[in-house]
Length: 166
Image (cartoon, rainbow, N blue to C red; front, top):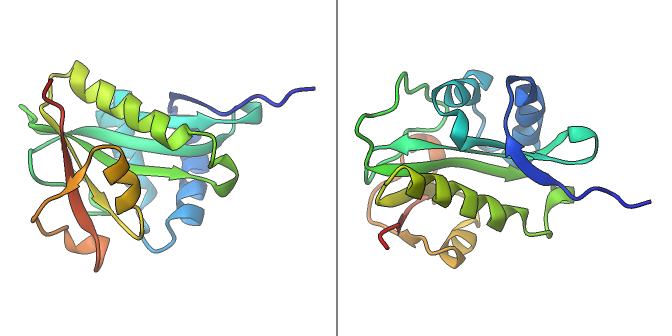
């Protein structure tokens, strides 16, 4: 009997409680109200993905959306609306449970996020790397920029950008 490998799929409203539980385990030092992820899903469903494992239960999630170039919204902040026009794709969050790691899912979702940004014609992707994540993002073409991360991300957070120009 083979076990189905986790796969990325569109996030559903019914996934929000499981995604919140993943966030609490993976990012305990960066809490966000459940309303933040629900708002991002409402504003940009194409940027919200769930890593579905056995039984279709989310083992991880990713949240991205159009945003302004050279900036990111603060952690645990409702944005109300997405900017039009947008100048960048913001990768707001990627979280995988430990048991979902080591199979390439994180790298795969970076590709999915960058593909959505390219589909929208956005010239760059922007994110905040927290903890020891900067190395992961650098391996995927992101570079640190001299922009202060919003205060909610805490000390040591790094704003990173990747050009999407052909």
